[in-house]
Structure formats: C-alpha cells, structure tokens
Amino acid sequence: MDKFLDFIRESKAELKKVTWPTKKQVLSSTLVVVGLTAIVGIYLFAVDFVLSALANFIFS
Image (cartoon, rainbow, N blue to C red):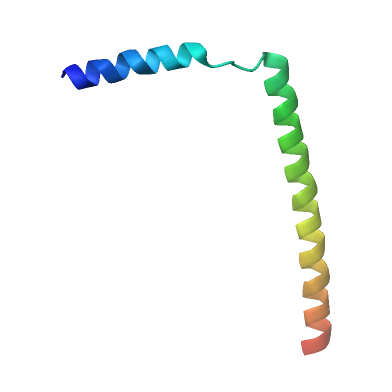
C-alpha cells in the first residue's frame, strides 16, 4: 500500500510541474486539427473518385 501512496504523491508533484495550455491555445490547435482533417478527407475523396472512375472505364 505504501508504494501505491508514493505513486499518487509523486504523480501529484509531477502534475504541478506541467505547463498547461491556455483555452485559446487549445481552441486554435483543435481548429488546425479539424481543418487539416477536412482537407485530407476531401483529398482522399477526390483521389478515390478519380481512381474509381478510371477503374470503371478500364474494366467496363
């Protein structure tokens, strides 16, 4: 049980050293991730559409 309590104490001490991002930083990072995900999704959709059309043309 002592090891577990030591782990909890050390974890709390380490979490106090963390520099947490501000609300603005989290929001801007989230928007970047969502934007890039949308761009990659659109790109993959376009590539899939073109390759599917090409495959249908070749094999039909």
